[in-house]
Length: 488
Image (cartoon, rainbow, N blue to C red):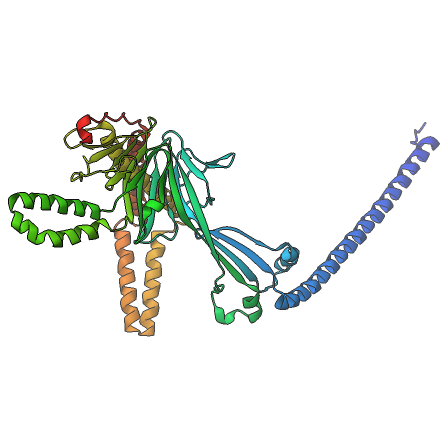
């Protein structure tokens, strides 16, 4: 009996259902894919339509800007760009033009502020009203804008240095260093002008741009500086002006007046006349009138320069080193001694009722010599820090922009080939010099040698910074007490 494979009715029905479901699924998938393509086409069409509308709008904005150009506000402080933005009225339109690569002209409102500048090392601050604002460390000109009445101060092992007006000159300047744990108060006046705006190419700037652009320049001037507490190195000059009106000392301390160098000349004339009268009275009488006129002229000279170290001590006394002649206004007495050795100068001590002059060349004082050494080391430290930063930046740039030494010579050879074909003798000489320079550069080791030199210099300044750092953070010893003979 032969076996036959037959599909049962139930199985056949199940298979038919699976086939029908598969066909239905395929049809559904095709319909879904088709719908998706239709939707994508619609979306793309809609986006293109919006793009065309935006471009049409850009043409209109570009035409509008020819009549009413956008205003770009540009702010610079001490020559550095701080902020730049379009006025809100124009911002979205400008963004649309940039997005679609449309060119347009811009009117600029320039604001330039030339403020009082200074450097900061370590932890320093500004007291402004009830605020105490930390100052960022900055070895160059700070862009922090001071305000009238601000108090500048330093913490332990910290300095604010080279305080000055940004447009100082040889005849009018301020240079002040605030040593650690010290404070001064600064009074500032501002003058604002509106000079005509400058253009890179004035001939290409439209009248509309010129008309809508403007420039505002603000210059800060130091009106007064009041030393409040601590140690300072001061160097101030105002040609033909009395700098006693600029430099003040806290009312908690004895009042003093700085005298011009000419006073020393007047004092020297007095001493000369006294000696002359003792040695030859007739000769003294002959020259007395001439010397008297010279003396009166010297003493009438205005004090237009103050320099030296000034310390406002915690005991209420003042100490001045390498200073002008001064007058103790409370007792009406002036200093007489002039220092001849800048490393061992006269120490002037001013108390409420006494004026002392101590010659540290004869009676050494550890704090006086320490201040002088500290100042020199501090200047060296700042110089080393700046040099270290400079070499770090050079190495960073050379690493990012390095190219084969062969390309340097190849460029010079290509230049030589080109100028020889031109026949220009002057250019040929220039190209020869350029080629020789390239050959010497490669013979000297090329970029590798240059980088090695820079690395060595960087290492040198790193070591210098490390060796000087403890010196500028060290505490100074106390002053020696002046003796009674120093007040004679």
